[in-house]
Image (cartoon, rainbow, N blue to C red):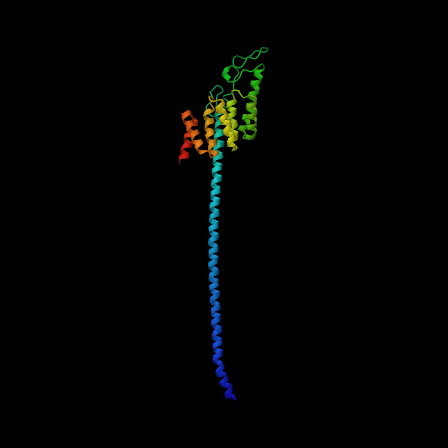
Length: 269
């Protein structure tokens, strides 16, 4: 009986040992599979990190591009305001009897009463042709004073940076005094008030009205220059180049011609 039991155990041991080996192999295989899965998971995380880094670099590039665009706009606005301030400074420093120069003639071009002062009780003398104004009827002195006051109000508004108010006041002045000696200046500063507020189409129309109605005005070179600038802002590059070249040929030696030549050189770069 004991022999039979021992014989059975001998036969059973190899099977048990084989089952143990198979179980160990399975465990090793599972461990290898887990390690492989971890490796794949690690590779996936690396890929995700690389994708995120690429996206961050793209966002940084966009941020830098936007910062550059903002800086360009800021520089452009500063240049425009600086140009306007410089012109206003020249106006303030101009002597009352000096001939208006370039962009600085707004106040210097103010009409002075023609002829001797009118004594009290005497009819007002009509305006002479020297002030580029149609001879007014009775009360011309009052009209002249009213025109000067209206112009000064509009000009003070543009000096203060109130461009909307300035454009409204200059339009009212031009409607009431279309042939006044200050009308060319009013058209110019009306165009400036639109240009500074990026209403380039309306600004261009104002400068062109000055050129068509007062081609001999001292403001004509600068108005033509600003027509070219407005065309550039409106992406009318060919027309702008033609206008800027016209400034250099039609008004050689002027400040407007110098600025036009400078802009043309920048466009060729």
